[in-house]
Length: 312
Image (cartoon, rainbow, N blue to C red; front, side, top):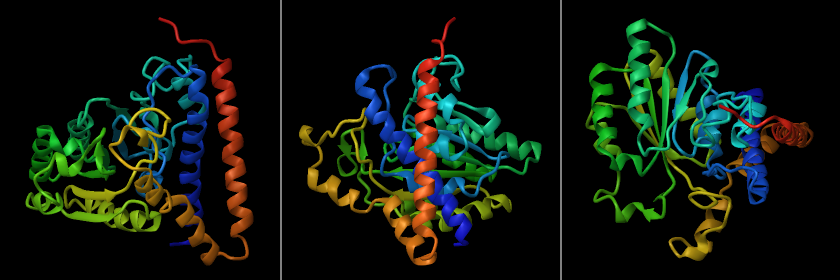
């Protein structure tokens, strides 16, 4: 990867991580009253895909939407105002964490309904094709969403009409607290999806360079009019399904499993790459990126807290 692109990728991931860590710190004060589904540990996917997107492209997300929206360019101050229920929030302060939207940045809303965003994304892609737009639509969803019939109906329609849509499944092993093997009779979804004539890419969702390289190839094919593509990204969320807690005490997953995935941290892996690719400059540049985003997050939170509450 070209070195400046590599730093851009690291910067996007750092913003997401520091935002999520800030939310986890702030949430116990109960000034953020919306439920939050944190993206910590999955940053490589949103960043690796979004590095190929422009304002002409759209993303449609789900309940775990912070990373997707921030990587697509959502304004940090307006993002935090939304979480704090303040005027100036991206959804007027009324939508909260699961209903973020900024059409000016190509963020076409997020849905708290499992698989709810999938047909919406296909609808946007259909509009793009009919209008002859140059953009594509990216639809993010978890492995639980493919248990819904609307996913398969949408996949079939998108393949039939060769819509410019990238389906991105973030397989973090659980639908809420239920593991995949307790929900799905098949072991691998990819041959089933490929039976629809859709190019399928199965990849390590915790490897930022792999996500960027593979999603770039998939997006290139979509832009050339070849129809939809499907990414199956294996990843893991570090925190609870909802909220900032460590939920290993509930028994559905172990502390050892969480630690294993934390040791495969996508930010750490990207940092290691930069150390090798740019040994003379990486330490200073990485530190500068961290300091810049830490200051930006602190400033955005302060501005959000000072803003008036959303009103009718």
